[in-house]
Amino acid sequence: MADTLTDIYPVTERNKVRRLHERGRYDHASVHAILDSAMLCHIAYVIDGQPYCTPTVYWREGDHLYWHGSSASRMLRTQKPGVPVCVTVTHLDSLVLARCGFNHSVDYRSVMCFGQAHVIEDPAEKARALDAMIDRLYPGRNATLRPSTALELKATMVIGMEIEQASAKIRTKGVADEEEDYALPIYAARIPVMQVIGAAEPCPRMPNGVAAPEGLSHFVPGRRLDEVMTESSRRTYATEDE
Amino acid sequence: MADTLTDIYPVTERNKVRRLHERGRYDHASVHAILDSAMLCHIAYVIDGQPYCTPTVYWREGDHLYWHGSSASRMLRTQKPGVPVCVTVTHLDSLVLARCGFNHSVDYRSVMCFGQAHVIEDPAEKARALDAMIDRLYPGRNATLRPSTALELKATMVIGMEIEQASAKIRTKGVADEEEDYALPIYAARIPVMQVIGAAEPCPRMPNGVAAPEGLSHFVPGRRLDEVMTESSRRTYATEDE
Image (cartoon, rainbow over all chains, first blue to last red; front, side, top):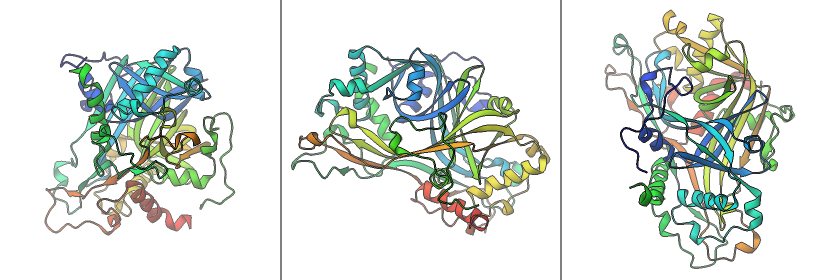
């Protein structure tokens, strides 16, 4: 299951990076690295010609993305038969203050995935997927939880999508001005941006003696969430990927 | 221009919050507070029935959103005549680890804005908008920059959209389990998530003696980006809003 250097998503008009195309990448390793370092995506879908953009928690297993929601959700109802979606994940990495307006920018890592979203109808597959979501985010956690009830499973809809095409777009170069502008007496800088986690706030209603599980040991206060999520994914999928 | 308590975006099927509707808000103050605390949005648009979801820097002026891009951009070309888009902004505020899979969640603040995106064609209005973008992010910065050239302005496309409808969706409650589950010996916690800025890395090619401008004094290392952006917006638009 590990990505090889030769695995590339097919490039067509749909996923080709046009604007600043030198920032585009199509190899599985680059795309999956971004997908595995986040937990929140934005999903674009269409109802009667109207586009919608919904943020949601997602996870990746091999070449598939999954997310979930209530069966009442507008998005999920329309996706039941399998409809085209675009799933986008973005990390903002820095603000770039240049010497002219035109060269102001941000450093970022983003990925757009295209495919047909469909509802996971099979109850066993659905239950397995929901367990996988918990463990992908919090390795080993599912085994420690009160099991889901039939009612809870019924109230949840799980959506799956094969990644048919994808493209990653990455900017890392910080300040990049016109050569003749560097001598100007203008302040220019890169300001890093990081999404970090804080110290866990244990629920005050826990019985005495319940400790934080070993599977969460990489949730270190102050650590970047993208690193934590990558580590969670590695811990959970290491056996099958390596 | 300040929001009053009675300003509410009209609610129709398009922007009504269905799933967990108690989390929904439609007042201008709630929607604008989220918009003004971020710099990155995700925009959903449709080309030939295919949805796309593109991350980009945006800004708000009154009831309008703006963003920009090269004239080569696929999205912007299709938006030229004015096309329906959905602009979504999301803050992830915490991870919620509950006692069963079903109650796992995240705390978040998000807003979806609906409108017709159109290209700002008038050169003077376009130049003004680009200056406004710089100053909204970095108060007072535009006056310190090397002015834009005609070529730079020509190579940039500015898109504007009136916010016709919007909805905010906010979850802040942390761990919320079934009453009978609290006694179980299961670890439950809220883990805060914050997007923060680091220390500015000045461009090494600046001439000696160029100091960081006063307008950036609120860019304090370690501070939350949402607070910094809100402060930038307040500084830049305070005169007209208050």
